[in-house]
Length: 280
Image (cartoon, rainbow, N blue to C red; front, side):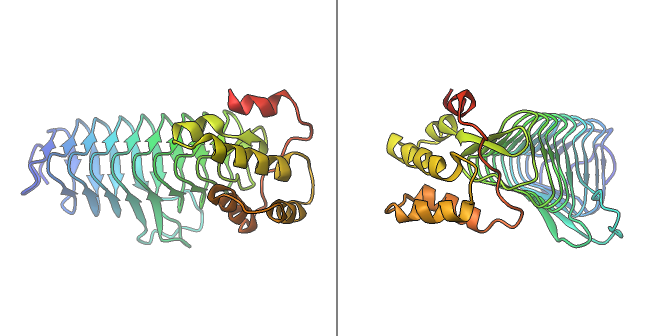
């Protein structure tokens, strides 16, 4: 498409310095700012805004109302030596914000698509590698790196400069504290720091999500049984379930742990002040 043109039938606004390929489809009200580069089979939903210097390569689909800040790159080739250039996808929902320098890569040779849900906030220089699955309303903070095949549950927080190993899962409403690193699965509703060390339940996040005190207390009690001390986790699960009926959230945590293939993050070696700080 010639620079400065309007995508047919969509009333999109394209800055004269932007380069928009012939296969690109722009929804109504899309804004493509200065020096953006869009090429391949790219679809942008209505009301999305590319502020400037954004690169999007196909095959990539973004829903409505996404905001992409300068130097965001979406849909480039995976950083995978086995990748031979075949068609792979990036599929992104609606209402996401990608701050400066964020990179989202297409799927790898052995995958099909990288998927980002709705309402996520990717801060500056964050990265989601090939075949990642990121849910809805997550926060991926500045400098956080998600390696290939990582899964992040809804409303989870990956804090600044965290690193997450390939195939690791981060559960719903979990939180990784800044500078932490994970190569084991992080159960839902938990706070993790250092090297996949669980410190407690994400009480503040749960309250903000509307959880009542009784539901939070049930999760805290379950955490104490499972991670209050280093122990055989299978036996701890059996003991937890033998204590009586469990809430839906406790059962969600149990099922997450049982389905883990990489192993689960473990509790602190000693109980102390760090455990209490999860509630601050």
